[in-house]
Image: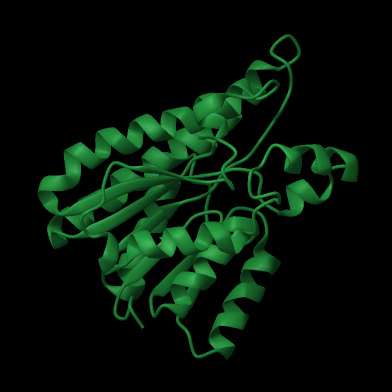
Length: 247
């Protein structure tokens, strides 16, 4: 149990990558706060699953895009478990469209959740981590934030912003022994990719050197590594989990 006595908050943890990250950290011994915005039933299911394994987990509903709501999430972890050692900023949404058709609201919503939400939670968590003089912040970016993607100017901007924020915070918080890193997934099998046509997935796989879409476990394993003692001298880095798609 390499994360025994640690407390982790994972945003957007009721589905997909966030769910797998929360599960992986709990299996590592951490007490996990499962954040969700809408999917209460799925969050409850994950909590029940972890409890059935004798693992510690609680759920908390909030919209991380709202500054005060993000503060409530972090405060909940402190009140429930007495500390916060790990923050995984995973919550994110998409609202894809070409710029000629994208509404201002679609741009603002994606930036508010993906980018500002990451800043909101990091700010509130950093206060406690600084007092502890220890902490790990892992931000979930995307390879889209590195190379861009047509129809995702909002999402690409948010994910690129997360990379810049990661590097800035890594420099700011290092003196308090807080590491800040980003994980940039490529095409990962989630509910979002399940709706893609088989021929499109086949074309995508042709451009991936390892020849397949990633699994949520592939991302969760990297996040778990960054939370452990093996990563204590790693900060300000962006790790692509994309099968070699972006080199």
